[in-house]
Image (cartoon, rainbow, N blue to C red; front, side):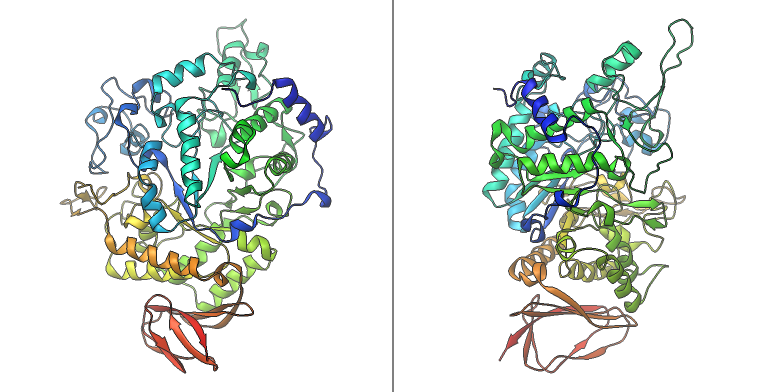
Length: 619
């Protein structure tokens, strides 16, 4: 069954949209509004390879991961790692490999797949989330899938028939959408989208339009045929090989100098552009056409947008020219005006300066970004770090970010705390250093990787109380609700701690000298129940999604704000100090704590390290 119209129709569509011109100037009239649904959702991010192994028959083999790492090659005795093996224990097949433990981790696989996600649908529905964001699913050798073999198919090891899917793919012409077929993995993903939609859960998929992997079909042709390849203008080539010499002069640009991630070519772009700042330009017209065909394939399978994705998360978006993003938005919104586009806009200058999101959320590029810019000051206020700030400084930081945005954009932002690229929330709070700097034992042998203390758990609960009561849609990295901890990438990508599994104890001082100290690891009931409760508070009180916000008090370590509209008022109060604080409540009614059910009238005693979400019950 084919999804696409013949190639010529696709070309005509693209030419009509962009008037035979690869330049996309700014135009106020092309601005579109953010989808209303994006202001109301609770996001849940799924990293399929580590989520759940629902079908062991499709587990990857050595052939599937041959180019998965720039640093070390998988040995012939490589095999899948057992799901419950201690994370820091070296695999038997890795013990004689060159390199260190972390280079070996790039080769480790656990066999997570789409059937595993399907098997956990009830867990996600009962948790209460209403939108999922999948890390890349495109066919690729790595564990993270940002090194695409092709963009238009789901990874063969995520579906039920890897060998059969590889045959289907081999019989296609990847440059011609009229030859594209649906593999078993593709079909299972479409079934998964339908299953999510049946439970009222939106689905967004991650893509990187900045680079591919070295097994990508166009790249392989280019490497083989050099300047005679029809794809020679797809990539950032520095020099081609000279066949008249014995040396290989072939040179190209890899994303952040990673040779296994060759960058797609930027055109009409300034030569001095750098990451962390928006810049004009575009992608090669043929590359862009291919990307648009892939986008259409998943937005409206067989021409039916009700069966397709609800949007895209766009990786390393500041590395891609703004002209492309404006064209991309127009193309996506033409297919589905209600689709959501969220960009990864993060570091201007690591590890101190975060990017300004404003140019990327002007109504012509993205609907929102992953709002890391809110988490850093929140961590410095709620966690016990070497960079603690006062409530007043925290308020000023939040206002600085929000005041740059329109009200619609502010409410559509993906409020992110932890992801596949950061320490897990518990570990982030358990350590006192700078945000995402030397945040794993390979960078700092004293970074605490073990089970956090009781105070950390409490502080994380207070942060979640904040995250779920401010403007913008809260985001959960898979496994946080299970009580997982872990330092920065790749330790944040452990296989999930499902309650029916028994895990080996984990070494908490794995990179330090002395006697090993082990933690019992596994599912945490209290964490799951807290996430369920705070999610229900958000869902049951629309004012938290759509209402206005006003700070009532910000002094020392006391923070109080309210969310309100014409009919509802909710006061959120925190005491991060070590002494009790008495806060006078507004006159006019009693207040009920939405987490505990306890009532308050004239005042509330804020105990040390406590928080309350108080709903006004009018008289």
